[in-house]
Length: 455
Image 1 (tube, rainbow, N blue to C red):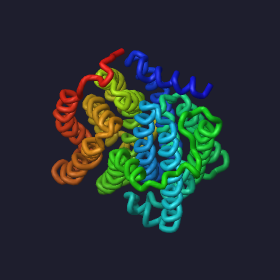
Image 2: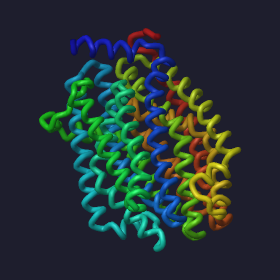
Image 3: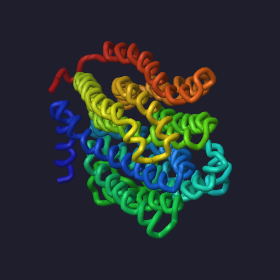
């Protein structure tokens, strides 16, 4: 029976029409991403009711979560891409070895970050860009995020392995359940139990724990092809290096996102807590929109990796163009709505006129940037999925680092607060211009199918 399930999964991944397969895998991932971002926005919404400084704390702790996700995604995407290609080659033994290794590595790293972060909590929050007035809220909120660090990092691994196996619906269940729980617990802990920002952090920590338990249960109950066991951890250092190399683009992307958040907070802090709060709110809204394209791109990743491993290169190319075009339509629609309703949307999270004024301009520029993102995201994910880690790392470093950091550091000197508001849009445009020729060159050199078959 187990062998029949493996064969059915293989046939599904290499023979299902590409658009149907990507949509089937992408919709659960989009739902997961949207729900996850909704619960992040719920934190922003509820914490915003405590005041402008408290609202700014959400942006500070967002940088901490980006650090944790950087390690989680490095191990998750690194192992997931390899696992998917191994399953494409019908090598389940190796898949289980990579899955177990990445899971226990992420759990260990999350625990180390938890211990170090709690020992140096105040300087850590200041490093992330907190002002003195934001600091008390950031410490309360951030303490529980650190307590949940091992569950967050390892959940990233479990989620990505499920996606790369083509079981996105299972991943959706774990993430969605945790997100819904966070939305329900936020107002209870914060206002009914009068815990304030501490309650927001506790709510997020509990939701992360529940997500971890549900996702882990998928593996322990035998719903996956790859298995988890401490006895399956690889003893071959080369295989650990493989996970790190393939996952490095995700580390670069998320790590630079964390650094960029710190620098953005510091640059915005020059203009007061209202600017920090406004940019924090705009980033959450932008991530909500961005998650639509990201979710569809993540639906494409297992298709690209599995079929590349199986030698079906035409399906990889077809999947890329379908995902990029579909993402352009989705993100474009959300962006236009966000552009028109920018003032209303900002006002949902904070009714401070100064926050709304700064946020409107920033959100409108970020909506413009959405039109440049689908192609760059899909290209990056394709390179990572097929094992082109060098090119994937380069592209991962652009949007949140190589292109963004000079913009956020230089533009405010010439344009003041406007420089802070437009920095990400400029970075997205430049990233698009660098990505395009790399994409076209790769697609041109991608050879015909090894098996000379196409569905």
